[in-house]
Length: 67
Image (cartoon, rainbow, N blue to C red):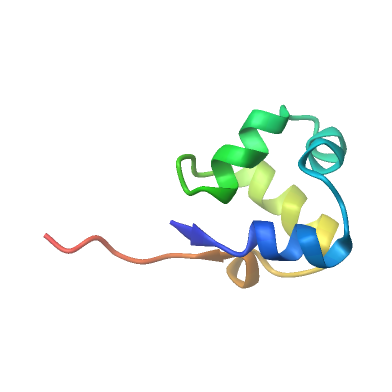
């Protein structure tokens, strides 16, 4: 799943460590999310949406895999 997390974080001028602390996750989790190696839990997706004052769909872009 693609996302705009890195773009949004940079626009706010915060480091991965700061976002990780606000979300109560590790910096590695934020890095993995930004690189698309990890999809967030529903709870984390809601927390991120609330933090950036956006909807989940404005942060995470769902694309169906081609079979």
